[in-house]
Image (cartoon, rainbow, N blue to C red; front, side, top):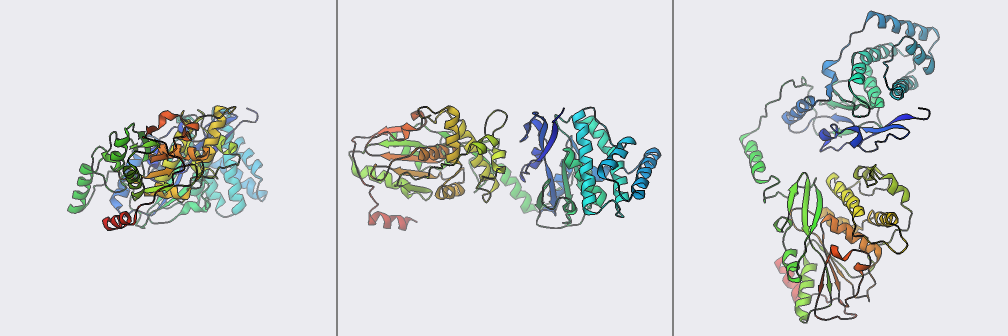
Length: 534
């Protein structure tokens, strides 16, 4: 046990799915480790104010209270104390007054002498209980001092609730599986704030609700070290905590709208609202097609294409990844198809190579830091890392990008260089795809997963440069994200094949190989016709 300790870290709140987060066992959360003791992450939240739909707000509170490992402490707080413990507390308080404030170590030594700190059968966690209580005392002493008029009340309350609640929770739950979620609803006094601080240090999930907009826990956690703050748009009165499920009260139009939404826009239907899946994760189902089929499918929206599906908050997007070698006998048909692809509103044309900047920095630490116990990239760890550049993007898109990065680094389609290990190849891939060009990010932000599929059209005649390895890395990521990708190589040379398994894209050989052929811009007539269609 020498050198071993318990380390509790904060598990960032996902505002759209925190109800599922609190149900996760510790081992399934980021940062779990039993090396050198025990490390795990907890959830902390301050939900301030109420939503526009007050009834829905209280329904969620009621549903939260029904969960198995959730305790609504504000509704069951036991303030009783035995005479024996009260006298022991009074004795320590008198010593503290007489000596004009004990040191924290001596204070805790007196508490242990009077057996006032709950014990735990696990020596490591017993030590953690002691150290956590010392942190609570240290905070109070630092901000107020033990001579403060509130100390006696706070100290007494902490002792009451440690024995009336904490002791039974520690005996009921395993620290290697999951500690319960403790909820407070409404106003908090200083004692209650400090008790929740104690619970957070120990490793409990804590959630504080205040419909009136007060943020009492900021007394302890102003910098949001232990808790994330969710501010709802309205402030309301503090109504009694719901003991029965509130009845939904909506207008006839509202109810009809909700019923229609459920009937028409559910996951299995083919009628989807704009941005219905903005919080879902996109995954690609790359289609194998003929040359002619490529252009037929390119104009179709995602949900019309074969194998499109939505399930378990994932959107499976049928996408195209094609390399076109050479040029058709019919030059007119060839350029008409090329230009049609580039004219889609969600398309971007690349004519200069390399079109990415190869990252030379050593990302070894960043990569290792983001691995889970299976040695795979962890989406949550990536999003919490200091190198993550996409905090400004919507939560759903950030999750989609992180998942695509993780899946791309797991693929067997990335080829190693001579003398390069598989792990070195993965590190290179990770290093390059974590820096996404701005024009690609803009396409990602416009991507409504069930609708028009973004397209990258690359025309490489080798006069305009050579496709690089970092270019290929980005293309692999975009394929995983669900983009349509078209690489034109009129001279019929290998480029993508040098870096990617040729099985992951279609290769279409046309009639003749042409060298040094420049990209043909659309005619003025075609441009006018296009503008008229718009």
